[in-house]
Image (cartoon, rainbow, N blue to C red; front, side, top):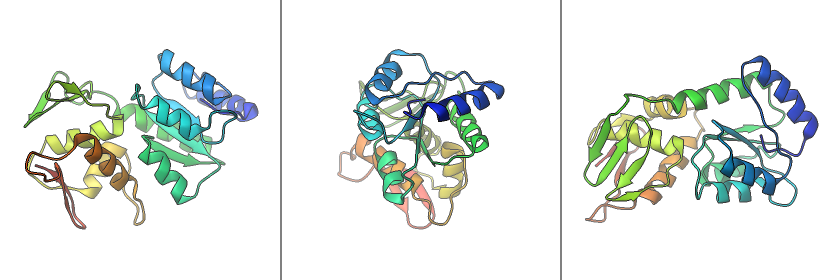
Length: 218
């Protein structure tokens, strides 16, 4: 957890420990970035408002070399802040004050989604290859810097190439939750994924959107 509120870190640390987690807390952005890059963590909880290097700067730098599941936890709960966090690569976003039970549930969902689907299975469609267990993805010989959530979305689409995958099914499988009527989180992750994948040889988007229904790859 990267958060400058030491009292909150102690409170959540006690709660998480009781739920079977081990928590390491860092209280400023630069030190948090260093710890996240060099430590062996299964998930990261990142505050937006940090001294020195703010949470968005940490997230931007971290996503250049790390795809560890990341949940943003911040008192800035406006839609524009959530969208910006998701655009920069956050897997989930929870506004303060957060119910510790919801934090535990969301962390468990992140960890559950990062587990292997079918070990050893390689999905290949065109020039893309995605290992469904490790969620590592190559375009030709280039390893793509996908976040866990982006890789999970792509895995669902590559398992059904050329077929429509409806929005609710995609959200449940990749985001671990149903979509609410005004929830744009899936759209933001799809947008990030499209940018990283680029277009097909004929200029078409690799991920096609079927308005109001869902998405397909190809």
